[in-house]
Image (tube, rainbow, N blue to C red; front, side):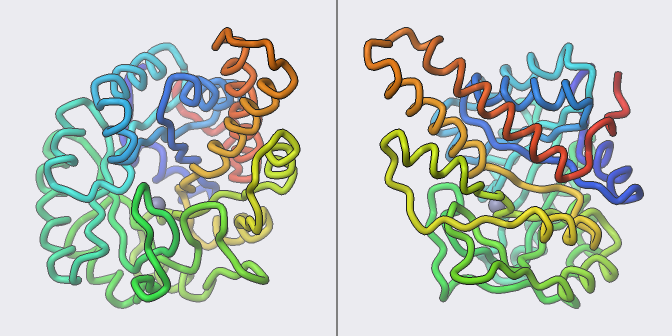
Length: 310
Ligand SMILES: [Zn+2]
């Protein structure tokens, strides 16, 4: 089974009211943890890399890992470019076998975002690659970039409708109040559900929630117990996530949860075994921690048993 595109997994998710997890990876162990969980749950899965991950690992390595992972998995696997900021990166990803790309020109004026996205859709669809785009802007750390309060904005539903109709994108990411990173809310977590409902109704296509990690308190305290200093964290609670999925979210981007699990796993091993220096003994348990986290997310998203491939 090779890699499939977003349409293959998201159209069914939208019809049946669940969401597919989109998990970021930067190395082999993270990817294996994600795939092990998805295979065990027989869940369709989206694996994705940012431009920053590509810069870190090299696109050839990441694409080859993904292809190998998908080959004998027996589930639907999508390889997606997360936050493609430049047309060149998007084209590069397509050439390297990515089956889906995000053209993220959400920091540019509406007309410019629309025109570049339309161009990407035109090219991508010729080679059966799906396209995601975004309107509005999330706060927090987006890949390597910090987006502050002043630059953040929520999506305008009427604009979203025009944008989706004119560009022909396959999935759309509306900014509705989440933020990237481990510090999503000050006070009570809140998403603009009315706005989400309106966007779902007006666009009629699968929607994507960015900045959607749960940032579990037990994982953060485990990291802190083994030497981390991570304070004031807040994620999207599971009940709010489930509501958002009911209202049209079909792809849930998850990066922070995996980073926290992976590093907490490493910290635990190094602290418990100060004599250890065999990487397999240190990264192996971290890979297991990623797997456990992904299984938990798949449960919340409702995608277990939903893979059509076998
Ligand atoms: Zn994002």
